[in-house]
Length: 280
Image (tube, rainbow, N blue to C red):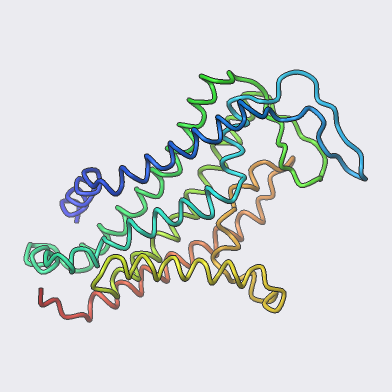
């Protein structure tokens, strides 16, 4: 299995698709940085009870750029899951489509070993996406804006909390780490659909459709009772890292549901792969 994992990681590192995903994240970070450069964050921020805070000093800093990319849904709950869906869709369906899955299974590796290697590869890519987004945004932020404190400008009107530079780096590390765990659930889901399909585009489309349906149910008032069980309800778990006091019980609940989704998808993928005839 370790040999199979090494082969899968090598193949993933050489794929243009994986590199294209990192490139798209770099473009997104660049656009956010350009926007913050042209339109700096205002020093008057909304507070509680209809009031406002006036913050002195520099607000636009490297930690703020990284924070904005984590807090704005376009990155962690839209772009990153879409990139993962495309990548994981080809892990098994792509091999079957190219006719290489049978060749892989003729080697001294079991179907379970191959599935675990594919699963771990998808998780590594999920972690790589999250780490790249956080580190590249910090690097570009340091080059453009320099270090400084973090003022969470998207706090939702629950008061103002200011983190010094060291605290900001710790909260960002926690936030991106939690976001990466959420992405591993999406990766497991994508691998399950990849085990069902013969075409990687179909597998990626099913994964995206599942995420969009989950997101739609999350915002419709008729399905309020379903919200605690929807995957998209927990993909923003990284946002909890920026509360004044970190809500560890809520984080634990979110991680439990994400782990349940990930384990269920991986088990179903194992059942499908184990029962499926591999003729080509």
